[in-house]
Image (cartoon, rainbow, N blue to C red):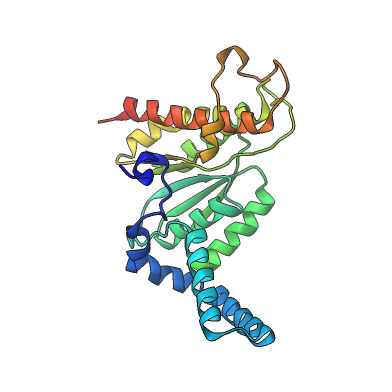
Length: 266
């Protein structure tokens, strides 16, 4: 058994032949990175002229940077599946991964419900998505650190939408200083896990009604540093370790997802 095999589910995706031999992924990569790669090529060419490097050295440097950039790009979705007619909730999607997810799903024909704490930023993101895809985007206020906000959000969803086909629990915080939510929970655990847990439970009946439906919970490799201590679930005992708290909240996401999958199976 090789070292990579021993890594099991934690092996790096790029440490495989499949990662580099996926032609469709490479095509998407060059499509997405055309501008960045052009800039890198010009920089390498200029540096080569300045330092009078050999052609072989310049070529090796170019290939190395190309491979590094491809690794940093990670997995690339090559699916062309359409999602016309689907209503999809994405939490925390006014920037970053959430925004890119909403953008892609909108381009596939889905109606996006942006569930965000900061509605002003969300409206700007929604305007951008609409311009790029021509799709329908709805912005609703949701603060996952507040159980009341979550309840109010779900009540709005019930009134406005008869079906919800996907719930993507993307929102979260990290490295937050020690504090509590208005309901008395640790701010990181309350936002990253308990808020998403409560939201999912309230939406389950509607998701079941919309079958086949999906619930997608985003986690992190940081879950490996997490430790479930139910005698100190609010992290009030001992020194407050932000990394431990964040990792534990991500571990809770995974444990919840596994249990939920068992309960809704079939």
